[in-house]
Amino acid sequence: MFLLITRTYGYPPWNFEFMNECTIVSFNLGLHYNARAPGIPNGYYGQHTLSDDIRGAITFLMDFVAAKENRIAVWRSALPQHFSTFDGHHEKGKDVNCSLNPLKLINSTRGQVIQNYNKAYEEVFSSFCDNGGNLLQNKTLSSSCGRREHDCTVNRTSVDYPTPYKFFSDNNFTRHMERFRGGDDGKDSNLVTGKILRWNIADLFDVGQWHISDCSHYCYVPPLYEAAFERLLLLLDHHSKTL
Image 1 (spheres, helix red, strand yellow):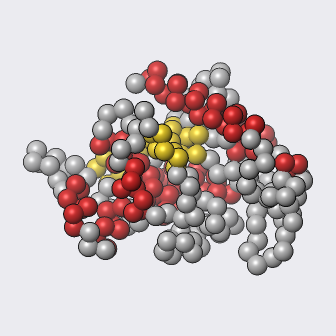
Image 2: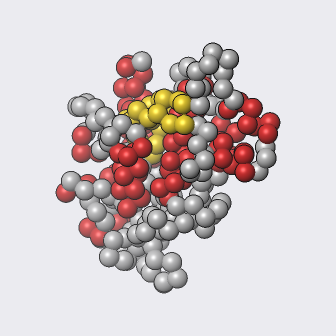
Image 3: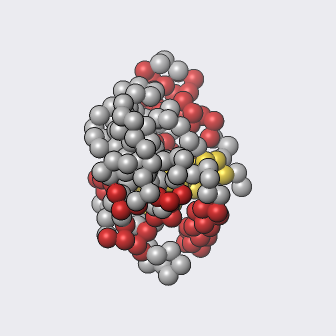
């Protein structure tokens, strides 16, 4: 089994070609997009909005799991930022310090979503997939952590948002477009359906006291990684039992 976890400053559809040998892909978008106005385009890798880039990434993930058996797609939650602003998010162009107060964030213990990027995820998944996804009732995985999985059907040749197909088409990469051609059976092979698991860990990181010298990265708290990856292991273990 080969697990790949990607981290980029935006949505780079050309990177997906390097994931074809993977068994599990964990993906995440958000940081470096405008947290308070997700409709404003990102400055990295083209002028795309966060919502459209999430749709493009979901389309790739569905194509990924449909192409071979036993592949798994995972969407990781965005992690909190702890800047000294009213909601904890960074403000570009302002000299802001780190805040030790986690209550500046929208806290999931009050029934809301931590981090505006996670709110954007919920909005896209609820409109793009199975009317909000399937919340699994599992004693090991607390329901307060959010949805566990979504079933999505997408058109992998859509050009309405930045799909990998659109990137190849716009740049005349004809060799890469070959695999998107319809099959000989007459069926529409460009519609693909799959499942995306949700790796929700924002609540683990909502502790401002750990951010004395860094407001949005977690290099100084290695024990958090053990807890976060334990949650991923539980998620994958539960999913494997349903196959």
